[in-house]
Length: 126
Image (cartoon, rainbow, N blue to C red; front, top):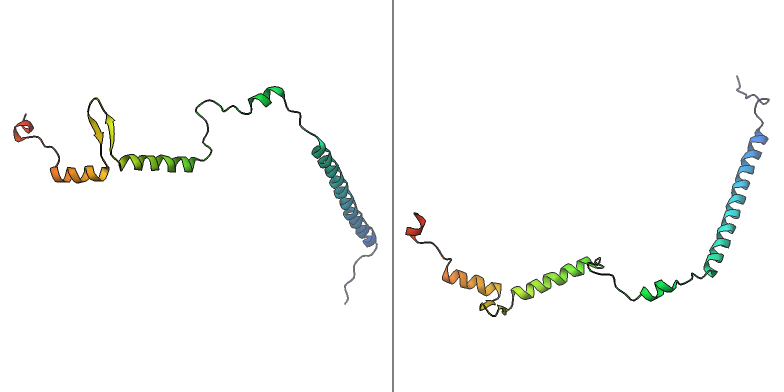
């Protein structure tokens, strides 16, 4: 027994022709769209934006504080370097009060040598 298909229900040439017409139509539409975008791109490249007189005079001004950070990682690095420099150097904090700053390593060493101040036994019982 051999299997056959019904030849009168399906028009194979019509289906293939319709598929080819869809492909050709798609290619034509893509080419037309590409040409239109190329035309608009070339026209926009020739177009020069007018410079507004008020904006031209304001270009050199910086906005008021606080401004946005342009490089926050570098700003944090600079802040930490500045703090490290302060912690590792001698300096005058308040001249009138006679307060000075010493490096943190020196302060730790002095604290270990002298010890921390403690209350006496009589002060603790009050």
